[in-house]
Image (cartoon, rainbow over all chains, first blue to last red):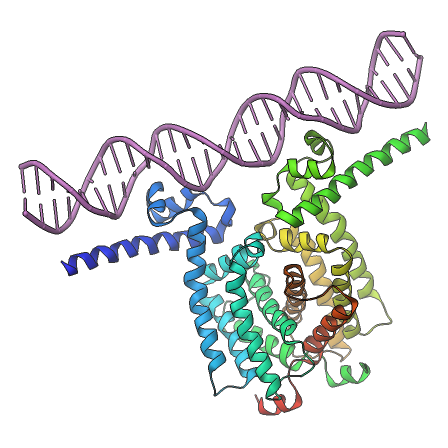
Length: 215
Length: 215
DNA sequence: CGCCTGACTGACTGGCGAGTCAACCTAGCA
DNA sequence: TGCTAGGTTGACTCGCCAGTCAGTCAGGCG
């Protein structure tokens, strides 16, 4: 009995996953509000009504996509913050590498999260903000710790710096989505990571540039 | 005749402006796709149908908001690029200052442009991209010139660096919109500018941080 | 003073698409 | 073999809102 029941549960989970996978695909292709629920159903090879068996609404489908993926990202970030072995700069480097690698592995998911949640009115007025601030807070904490340890410039406003860090990464993801930034092969990815590190950590200036820049 | 005709034209332009101003306000408050055309009409104190006298469609209203404001921004950017007097880092600093100041002067317009065009599916598939790449190109050119002059690190991929630059600024605007970043008073604005400069130009690392970071 | 032009009005329509629901399986069980 | 539960189906409903259009009003002109 337990066995059979479990199997049914698994099947149900499979259906759910199947719908979510399809949803991610179509959302990535046409954007959330241009996709009709029927599109998701067709792509998943499933009847229209079944979507509403597993999800309350179209919005709820998108939320599930978000929660199930952002959640694991947040978890990884949290662990990274609490790691004793790495310095703050190393942690920041890890985070950017993490995202850029994710871009190879699961571009559609990244696209949907950035496109439909981070970017979009959904972000501005909804509870989604809190999920995002979770990530911001982690980066913020890392920066503050880095400043305390003397590894990061004390002149940075940590909050603004966290925004700069995330904004840079987010826009790079957007660029990769649009194909403006090449980021498919491991070599290209390495190059992008290097520029992120150089620009954000070392700064864009050369020594010569800094001399002229006597502020 | 010329006089009277001109007056009529002016009045017509006023009406148009009046509608656009109202549109910016409501778009900023409720987001493009949650605002009904009737909202714009009500806010502008104008009949529903009149909107369609001046604009082809709701989309066209948004496009006009975008074109008429982004156009002047692009113009300023272009002039800045061609200026002989400033070094590349100084130019970048100017651009960020420009945006952060604009945030004080016309927050709604900035919000609408960022929220509804830069961020939004509108951006991904439409001609809007080209307008944005215009701005990217300017920053890209400035970076390349700065590298040639020896003021900016030659190790940066100029394209990726341009994305980082814009992404940082864009997210800061978002933060200001959300009220997460304080940027109302001149003092706060100065502080934000300083962090942008520090983080992007000098880099987030301290010397101590760089030593440890032997790559 | 009538006429004409064009700004201006707002009730109405048409279509779209989210969400519903009654009917239909199918599998496990007695 | 009949019964139930719940997964599955897709035609239908229903509200919403962009866009239309028949008509009003004002002001310039012969």
